[in-house]
Length: 239
Image 1 (spheres, helix red, strand yellow):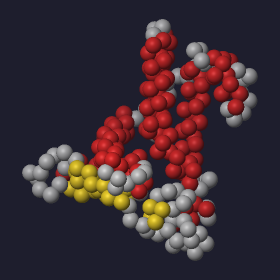
Image 2 (tube, rainbow, N blue to C red):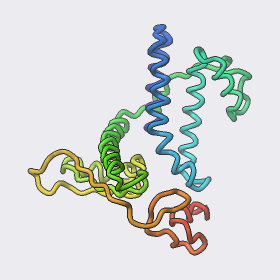
Image 3 (cartoon, one colour):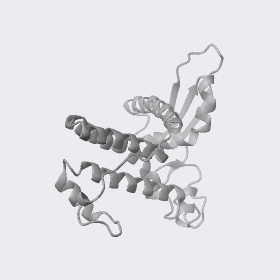
Image 4 (cartoon, one colour):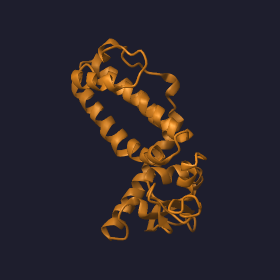
């Protein structure tokens, strides 16, 4: 829902840039959406559920639907300035009864039902916290305590005013930081430093060769002795 909200704002900016003949705004907008919103964030985070979740998993199917919406919109938005690239992509899009060329389709318009400013505000807060965690992970890498982010178990000490919000979104934060474990604790006293502090240790357990996360339940499923419980469930279609 968050990335589809961002997509709608992106469509709005691109349409305005075309209408105002501000092609530099258009080019920067296309590049930033692909490089920042998608490559550096959304697609990176999505790899886990797309690659390892069960084919019928709600999370995986939701991700596929969102990526489909994004791709169709992107191809149409870039078509006036990247005509040959857009048409080549269009030929491979698995759409029923599609026109022969992307140039024969309607230009994307803003879909208000996909906008959610309250949700976007929550995710902006989570992304700020993700930046804090990523800086902590980079320090741990330089000190040779971890290699990849998935080798990390992160503990965040957060101010009292942020604890309830972050606790409600702990799983989301763990997912977008791409770490094997993320835990929270509140500040020791009301007078402590209001800044968030990050502690990074090596994650306990064994690396699952399928999802690459470190889990203490690897081998718990007799039918899949080398996999974590989540991956074993995915292979059995139980996710």
